[in-house]
Image (cartoon, rainbow, N blue to C red; front, top):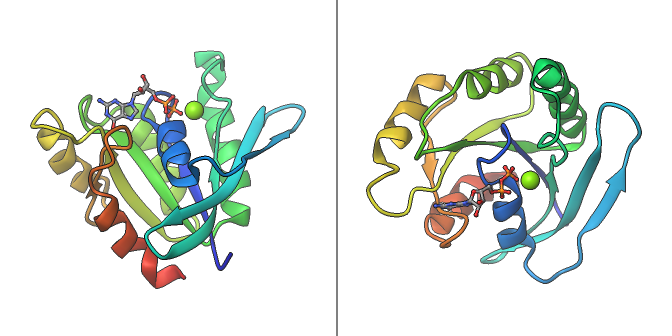
Length: 163
Ligand code: GDP
Ligand code: MG
């Protein structure tokens, strides 16, 4: 596997759905870390001809909202350590939230390249969120639907330079 991709974002944006789509039936390895990082799932992804390692930064879902920001930073930075590129997922149906801005700020301050991915873009409900994602200032967002599989060609094109 030539490179590693970390999927990052607030709870419920579809990180695990995208992870599962990329990894498919190939086996995922779940690492349990004590303390801040509850668990991190990694697997071998295939997207058209591309093969890469993908990390799903899971485990934020049950976090105490009060400590969420700190946990997010710690997990994000931990995954970024290992990644050649990261996908910042947002929910295009909800639009940007303060938590998305928080992630964007964390990612802006480090050196791993970031691709903004606006998920849940099937149908028209995602269009405003996709446009809003430009304002994160991290480049052109890639509109996908992890659930329905749309936009995977655009994701492939964006990831190809890292292979
Ligand atoms: P995570 O917390 O970021 O890992 O998010 P999950 O992958 O668990 O997904 C959260 C919710 O969003 C679930 O109910 C998914 O079914 C839903 N979801 C994920 N991807 C999509 C998508 O592309 N479109 C829509 N409409 N829902 C999605
Ligand atoms: Mg998840």
